[in-house]
Length: 286
Image 1 (tube, rainbow, N blue to C red):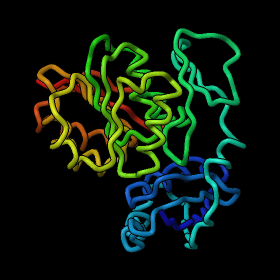
Image 2 (image 1 turned 45 degrees about the vertical axis):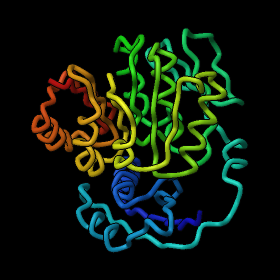
Image 3 (image 1 turned 90 degrees about the vertical axis):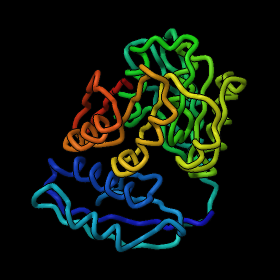
């Protein structure tokens, strides 16, 4: 699979730079970008060649919401290298959620033993717990009574949310992702967390749900706003009565349009959480 490497140069006041980076990543995510890393002058993003649409990206950046910020970008073919080897060399420090769940890689173990530990070996897939949206989703899962429930993880990435749900008591999880690396990585992480017998990872987008048998008690989607709006009906069609929908991957200013879409599909908002400018919503199907 071939990728473009896009360098976003951000001209912004120092106190706004990190917010600007986050917004650039969110907007680029709507244009098909899959992963990002901060640079001294902005952010670097990676997108599959077949998915890249420069016109769409320019249109999204034209509406950049922060004042006094200017965004320029350059595009080049991404170096064909061993991404997994690079990740294994870097890894991430353990993330603690609700003082009860530790998310870590194989090289950086938590200092204390907590009730639940999730090991993530990320192969260029989103979802290590380092991002605000992932942490909020795990925290929301921790508040639910998941014992014996069936979970659907839309845009599974590393599989972290499905794995967290299983470790919190869910009986079965099905995840899907449009990126073949992510679908494979999710399977791998299920194995190292010893929940692979309960987890199915599929390659595809929301259209694949038509081929998935049965309904779900909990549906998870940590994806960008536009995909959530486009796919929410497909999510609700796979939900049982009184089931739960957890959404994140968007900003606080996106909440009204997501609430409106959810209400039109017979969903009632039950909870809302923020971490900085990022948001997470919990709905129940009527």
